[in-house]
Image (cartoon, rainbow, N blue to C red):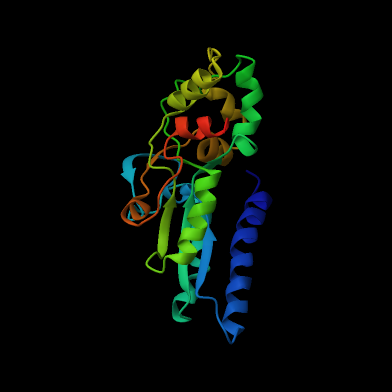
Length: 224
């Protein structure tokens, strides 16, 4: 990735957060909670470990972006404003985003796995993501890092099979992993070829209820 693009990406996250924090510091009546939504890329691109909110910072460019993004709001701890750091997985909903883009491809029977499909990727449904934000506002016991991911650990192959089965279409055309090497390294490794097994440990211990905790429930919800 070009250095100027890297700088723009970093500055857009960090500087905007610093601006908000500076504005909060000047407020007479400060907000009770501040929610920063970075990403699961905090843990890097690939890990064999089961990752919780206590897991260390990973080694990748986007991990560094997430770390600086989250750190930009650290002054709030001295201002009595509760700070929630959402580390968000891929947000899925049939009406938009990534799932909507691949839906027509799978309907044509042209869907397939990325490479062998063994890589894990963290995800969360749009409805659960929306409810989670509300939950974090209302539940004062939640602060610090929160893994905003569904409890189901799923591989790319399992994800592909679920969509294929739901649509009753074959998924026989795997996308060779080397094709993604044509993209900038950070984009290929951190976004498309990531392999992370992330557990929403804090949410599991809280009163939050996932409405679509597994991919099949999400796909069935489309027909409701």
